[in-house]
Image 1 (cartoon, one colour):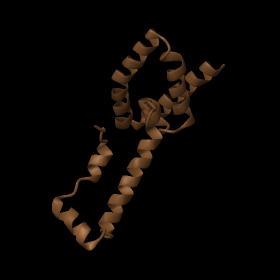
Image 2 (cartoon, rainbow, N blue to C red):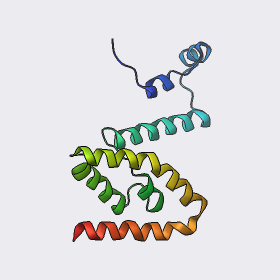
Image 3 (cartoon, rainbow, N blue to C red):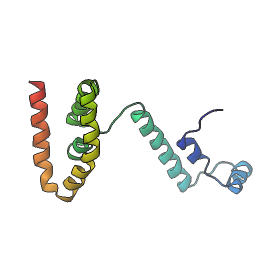
Length: 129
């Protein structure tokens, strides 16, 4: 028995009447159908980009962006240095626990974004030296 992904299940989300009409009248080329196809394509592309990767880096993503060099550096630091040791994994778990609160604080008080960026850049600078 084969496992079915959520994406595959979502694509099956048609009623039997729609399936019958598609078979009888041909494929739906309406604007709505095009939007659905585009959404499915974008979802698949996103899934391919992130599959097999742990892309969580909440605070850096919030202040720099998900693919910013700073965010990628911190992910690499996590994967190479922290994940390799039990104390590092404890730090990661603690970070994942409290970072959503920090991100919420940053979203509520945008004036804190610049100081957080400076703090992260300082950490990266110290790590690289």
